Image 1: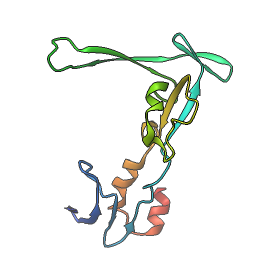
Image 2: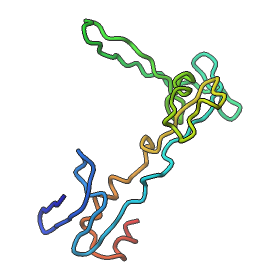
Image 3: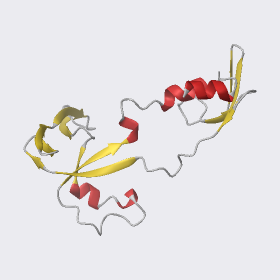
Length: 149
């Protein structure tokens, strides 16, 4: 992919729908990406009672998010309440037991009774990869790059 705008020219690779170069170069700088096999998610076993979960010895309220799922052939959608801890959504253990793709060994051999929350790096509010990538095509040298970081 090649992008040119103003006096900026950048060439490289991207993901469909992302208007940024992930791996690329300009006349001044080249960069790569090493996140291909990175651990981006963690499961946390949660103790849940009603609409609360235990965190550091204190019961905290779960965030409840109501979603309506449209179903083909039905006038009204199906309501779904998604429970969240501060880490992420609470997953049903039956879903996890059938999720062999979560790791190479699968999770079916583990005791997954109970409730789990899923923390995903893409949902971190202060995560700034997109903002950083949007600066790379304008950086002129390594000093400027270091000053930006």
